[in-house]
Image (cartoon, rainbow, N blue to C red; front, top):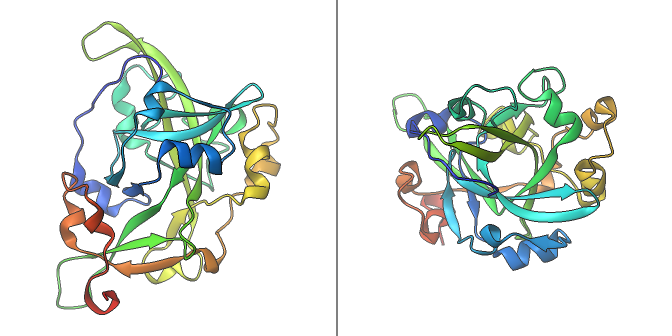
Length: 254
C-alpha cells in the first residue's frame, strides 16, 4: 500500500448482510502476477500472505495500471474519495453498485479514471435461513476450474490527516456489485461483477473514459463460473482465517 496504512474500527456483523463482504485470497502474489500479466509487483504485495477470510478495512491485493504498466499492489478495502474529510467514510464504501457507479459522487471519478481488478479465489455469502431457524448458512462461491475471479473494482488516492493527525497517503479500493445471475440468485440477489480476460485491458486502461461503454461491462457473470457449497459458521468470525473455512459441510461434504 502506498503511503501509511491505517485501521478503522470495523463492525464485523454488518458485513454478513453486504455483497461482497468476505472473500478468499489464497493465490500467491507470484501466481497472481503471472495470471494477470503484471509487469511490476510492489514490496507490500510481494509480502502478502494467504487469507481465507479477507474482510473490509484490511489491505487487499489489487491489479491496476499506472500509465502503460500493469501493477500489483495492496490497497485498503473501503474506498476513500479524494474529497473526503477523513478516512472513516471508507468503512461504508466496500462495495459500489453497478447501477449508480457512474453517477454517485463517491465513485464517478474513479469509474472514469481509476479502475482496477481485485483478484479473488472465491467469496462467501450467507443464505437466509428457512422458516423456524435463525442462523444464516454461509456458502463458499468459487470457479469450478479453480482459477481466480477478476472482480471489477475502483481505486482512489486520498491525501490528508491520518488518525494521529500526521499527513498520510492512502490508496483504497471498492468492489463493484450488480444483479445476481441464475446460479447466484439461489443465495443472494446481487453478486460481484466478474470481468472476462477479454475485457481486462479495456477496464484497466486509464485512457478509457467512456463511462457508457464501460457500463456495458457491468453485467452478471455466466452461470458456468459459479460453483458453491455450504461451509462452517466459523467463517462468521473474522479472526478465523484458515484454509478449513472453504471445506464443504453437510450434504456438500466428502
